[in-house]
Amino acid sequence: MKISCIIPAYNEGARIGRVLETVTACPLIDEIIVVDDGSKDDTPQIATAFPGVKFLAHKINRGKSAAICTGLETASGEFVVLIDSDLVGLKVADLTKLIEPVIDRQAQVSISLRRNAPRFWHWIGLDYISGERVLPRRLIAEQTKEILRLPRFGLEVFMNKLIIREKLKIAVVFWPEVDSPFKYKKYGFWKGIKGELGMLADIFRTVGLFGPVRQIVAMRNLRVPGETAKKITKLSFIVPAYNEEARLGKCLESILAATANFSVPTEIIVVNNASTDKTKEVARSYPGIIVVDEPRKGLPSARQAGHLASTGEIEAHIDADTLMSPGWPEKVAIEFAKNPNLVALSGPYIYYDMSLLIRAGVKIWYGFAYLLHFVNHRVLKIGAIVQGGNFAVRKTALEKIGGFNLDAGFYSEDADLARRIQSTGRVKFTFFLPLKTSGRRFRGDGLFKTGWNYAVNHFWTMYRHRPFSREYKDIRLK
Image 1 (cartoon, helix red, strand yellow):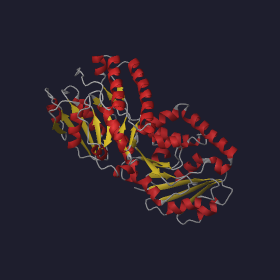
Image 2: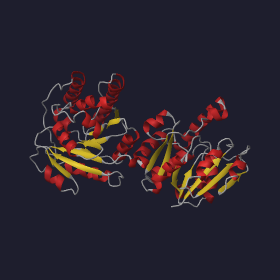
Image 3: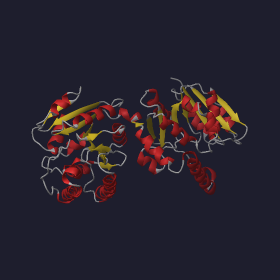
Image 4: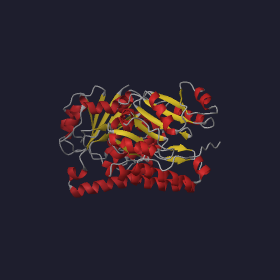
């Protein structure tokens, strides 16, 4: 696989030399093309001093998009690496991390996340307008006419449109020591502010007012672990099942589909929790599924049995009436790999078989739940929010607290886990990790009774360290 690197440059004499020193030393790059975009400083002299670098020049400044198109006319690699010429702190190891997910075929696109990227980009794990990326040359080489018509800062979001359209897998690579100078530092305060506002205007002109949000959501769903895949050794899926013959098959099929191209080793464990129907037979009908019998009925007992049987570094606990979302395993691997202090990760439910009104109400409830999570976990440090049936935990952290509490009630087993495990590290609740599930309990018990039972038991467990009630009704609607 041949890799071409294109570096657009405009008046970057102060920085491009150090960037080229790094790029020319990277053994994974076969071809280096610098496109000078009408510089008036010594950028051309510095660039041409590096042997083996192909130097192209515009007589006048035409913008980054035009410079990239000029580079594409010369590039011969199957993939291109786009690198800004003003980077500070770039090392060969950073370029290697950026390129490896593509050449290892873990992803078709790789995007950097620099140290000084906005805090929000770090929070969501994606800088969707990063200028440093690896992608197939044909993806953009076939679109040069349209690229040349883009506004000056429309290139990255235009490339995002192409990536999303073709559903290319994306590796996000963290560069912990690399910075890109802010415009106000390069051009002065007022010119810098004007430049930032101009960039936003160009982005909106290219993809519309709500385009950036849609791109961020779509690109996060396309993420793969990238270089983090080597840090997570194994992911265990644990599915407790009591009389779930009607729904278990769809759950297992969704997990198998979501992990079909997953680069991290996985195992799927079904805990047959005192079932009296054909749950066990359904589980065994799927090749590779591990079946564990747990005669003591109850979610805590079933989760504990799965925990003891699992061999993965991370345990993903998924309820049997839940459908795995594409990209869910990748998101879990990324989150645990990038933060060694993360001990539990959870997201919300989407009740796919309930009315729009009820689903809207659930979203509002999750908003309050997130605020509660922040206060209890980050401020008071007494607990957190973990959504039972949609969470992953680090096995070593679970072992530290003695596993699941077998005396925790049905409505409070997740609250009990969150309360105890938060003392070992960070618990994260994110709206970017949803799973679809059945609303059968809402229909069986009623919306308000169900909400009341979960809310009261959560607060009782969090503040009094025991469940409010232990009684519950088995609901198995077909």
